[in-house]
Length: 442
Image (tube, rainbow, N blue to C red; front, side, top):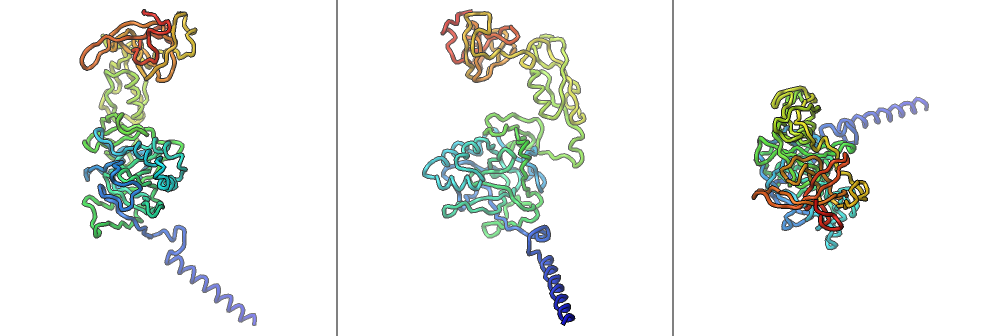
């Protein structure tokens, strides 16, 4: 009897081993074993083709896709959302209308869609407006894997998708595509390996002309504690140029980049050397910002003005275009005199008693504006006022403002500086009438 029991136990154990081997061989359970060689169905979404089940009808024109050259794309694989050159953009066109998107979602008639849209994004309906305002419009430069969502029968239906290069999207604060602009559909992260994508093309399986499996990318968001502050975009209208787009802006404030951010570095040399940009003849504050944005350290020395405006960069060492170690120090020789980087700001105050002039009036700045040595827009800048802050004004006077059509007469207001000095700002930048409330003429 005992011998029979031992035989049965052995047979059960052996059968269990066989079942385990069968499971491991077929990959039918979760874990890394099941993931090996597994394919994930991915639907191709072509540029400029209306989505079958959009959240927003095409007539709303929330955004437009763009043509991008085949040679512009980076190599394939997983890419960080803040990588220079990952996305493209244009200074002459606006690819996404964020305001129209928000208005549509806030419309009570579209409440059900808004709820589903927010759910797909992992947020509440009341968070939509703040979320959208922080998004940045860009254009995909690679065929890109995402988690897309259709709107079917009152529900957000998720599916894995491959978006064609040239499709306009809104990216979130971490560089991840969040909205497909042409239809407003919410996007998420593709949760599988790039090589696992089994792409199905519509229109009888016809691939788009530029499709290359080796250039398909999956975008990985950056760490939450280090959100993207600015994107370095390839100018899709000029493949050798670039644009810097501040996160959350629509492109109207883009700054040109001298170098092509899409030019990939040779592996292993990413941090070896960098080319020094030309910053001579620029204000030192602007020059410092350019250099620091490229990863350089900056120090300054006083030079002889030679007729240059105070605060102007006269020379730089190393010189422009030199190749130097990444993170090297660039020394700037600066024309002496006050400049925005070295002079104290006007003293914001809630009361005019901070000044010895008892007739001073407190004024509020309507916009950021340069404070100058004298009442003229060609006078050297010595400081600035910040929109919304209040400043003690001593008096007003007449001066000149230079426009594209020449110089015109204008009112200027004299302000007190923290250092005890005085400066001038145009009256149009201040909220109160310069001649009101006891503010006399200088």
